[in-house]
Structure formats: structure tokens, C-alpha cells
Length: 404
View (cartoon, rainbow, N blue to C red):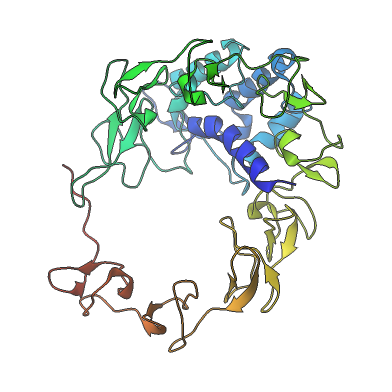
């Protein structure tokens, strides 16, 4: 089982749909006050599920049915199952619904995640649970940017990252950063945004191609249903290569050898595609995508993708970016496969890989109290504020970023 593959599949799924929900609460009539509309009942979700059904023949099944799509999609976007509501005008809602209802079935708007979809009408939708978006020339230090812009880091000391419009063809860009360019272009070797390449053109990455697929140094169309395929080849939309042909992903209880081939939100458990637990409902040994799907006191194992009880001191663990597998007061020590170990207390020995309890820092090799505001310091990690003023050698509040 490859947990990372399934996490990335859901992230790819969320990458587009979560791009259409990034900031405050309700839906507003044009010129009126926001109207709180629970997202699961919102027409945007209905239109997205209708799109999945409409395009199933060409692109393969994403869910077993429209009802399953409506029931599980909000939770896959946010495994905590917090209620989300749109904060948009009715015109913006309608534009997104129209796009979902009419967009071509040549590609999956959920699974393909192409550059060409960066600026679609659904990208303006925001919800109450997400941070607000910054507009052009506004700081994006603590929030994302509106559609058509990206967060560009300032080179000046303490400079704020600024929301910057993506450039059209011919606009200067950094060769390694196609975020500089609009969705229908990419940053070429000449340092300018250039149009996405047609099939047959030379390429070295998917992001250079209109089709979204670069294979053997050429842009190509992803393979259609029943087309012959081999490992590493791209099947269209939600289709997957099984037995040498592009076909539907297995549904619930379908045979699998890896979670990567199961449908969105399912994991391969003992050779069968199994729905992952959501909304904090998963008990010990039940399948999960993240720890938000597990009951309190348990965590989603990074190795088995099953909810597991938090490990005690001396018990085995796996360091994971998703959540600690160790009980409170412990950390996972020992590299790729570790042991739950007590976090070091005041005056105890420590190192960069052996942390101290909250309120203390590892000073050379001993856990010392963090230095309070205006206390003497030499490095930022000595300060409770995590900022040491180089001039006064005292702990200060971090300076606010300065607009250039």
C-alpha cells in the first residue's frame, strides 16, 4: 500500500476543487448581504457531481454514483467535516455552475489538474473557513491571492510577499517558475512566458503541454478508454492502466494491489478498495487518509493507512508529516523507523534531533528556558518570540513585513 499516492490523489482532487473554495461564509445576491448556504447543498457541488457523471464514459468513474459523490466530496475536501459556506455573489456562483455544466469532457477537471484550468470561473469561490485572498499588489504574507495572481516573494529584507498578476505570452519570467505565467502559457527557456505546446512538440515536463502530458520528450494526448498502456503512461481523466489497458478505477471491494488505482477517497486494504473513514469516525484498524478521519486518541498510520492507537514510550513509531504517532509528551526518535521517546525537560540534554518541552530551547546541548522579550540573545531560537535583533542582541517581536 502506498499511502503517499492516495494522499496525493486526494490532494490533486482538492487542488482544483479547493482552489474554488479559499476564504469566507455564504453566498450573496448581487449587491446584497451574504446568504449562508451550506456547501453540501450548494449547486456548485451538484454541478461538479453532474460533471463527473456526464463525463464518465470518456474519462472513467470518479465515484460509484452521483449520490456517493454528493455524500463524500465535502468530507474529502475537509476530513474534519466542518460546515463550509460560500461567500460569493450569485453571478459568481452561476458562472462556476455554468462552467462545470458545459466544460468539455476531453479532460477531467478533478484529476488532470492542468495549467489551463488555473483561471477557470470556479477559482473565485471562497468559504468562511479559509483565509481571505489578497488582491494585486497586496501582501500575501498570511493569505492566498485572487484568481490570476500568485504570491511572489520580495527580495528586500523583511519585504512582504506580494500578489502579482501572472503574465501572458511574452512576459518575462523565471525559467523554473511557471507561476509567473498565465494558465495557457509556461515559462520557456528564453525567460519569457510562451504558449503551451501542442501534441508532438518537444517537452520535458507535463506543465509545458496543452494536453497536460509529456511522454518520452513529446507532448501527447492521454490514452483513451481501452487503449493499450504500460506502467508510467497517462490514461485520460480518471481512467487507470490495469492489465495493459486504460479502464475504470476499481470501485468499493474491487481488487487492488495499491491505493493508487482505487477511486478517490478509497484505500487498498487487504487487496480490496475500501472507503477511508472520514469525520473522525475511524476506530483502531479502520482505513484512513489523514488523522482527521480517526477518533480522538488515535492517529492515521503513515505505513498502514489504518487508524492506530497513539504509541507509548518505548513503542515503535514512524516519523510522519501528517501527525505524531506518539502519545502526548513523546516524540518519534530514530529516523525512518523510530521509538517513542520522552521529550526532554528543563536542564536535560538535547540536540537538533532531540527536542525540548514547550517553553524551552536546546542551547548547545541543554534544554534552557526561552528568553523573554527584551532579554539578551545571540540567535532567534533562544527567544520566546523567535526573533533576535542583531543590533541590540535582545529578543524582540518579529518586525512586520514591509511593503516594497
